[in-house]
Image: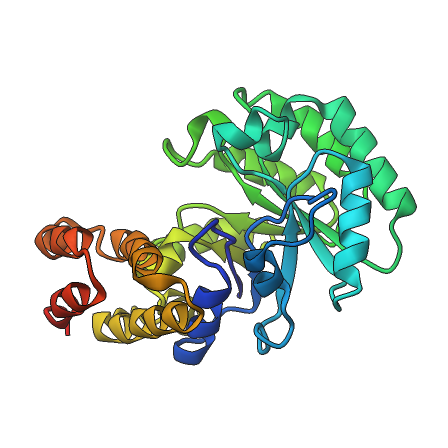
Length: 308
């Protein structure tokens, strides 16, 4: 089983990934959170760090791009290609209103004709790169999936990562496995499953269906952040959790943010977001509340000691 780390904006970024490979194993491919075409301005500080080969060494890192313009995709991918990257993933899954209102992310799924033209142009004009897609199964109606599959099967994608939910589902409601199975039967490229992989035991149940569909690769997001040992647990078949190791992992993330001059306030914001995922079980409600109320790193450190 191959395991990919999902690109989660502001969460599984360059700092998270660097600390992750120091403490844990099991992830075969990493993705940058989406990068948008920057037109006249240069790359932001965070984008430069996401793309810095030296900083991200030791990772099989794929650049994810968010756009609905073939011209912008070609220009941006050419720039990033010069930095040493040859595979790009197109984000057609982000459900955020600020993204979809501009017809990007899962918002692009509403116009299959425009999507078809977009793919036609980038496959005609791009050279020396691999292109993959991370997609949902439609915007607001399961019937949209048939038309999307007809578009996807026209092109030579390196792989297609499918989150079997509609944009309107956001991250709620059950995944629609019927649509995923349909894709496995229709598409001739490598298919990757994404969605609701939270525990090793839960994965074992899901894996029976994945095997029936010939799928041997999954992408994990929140489940991996909640339990960074999950990829290793899936690969070994042994359930693993270790809060102490997670504390050490987040301590390294804290030190890295401070080393990069993020400042106390921004570092605390990042840490609180991570702990909100890690300590999402009700049994941690009291300690999570203390962490979220911390105004200084010293105060934060005192609360973290309670977890050690």
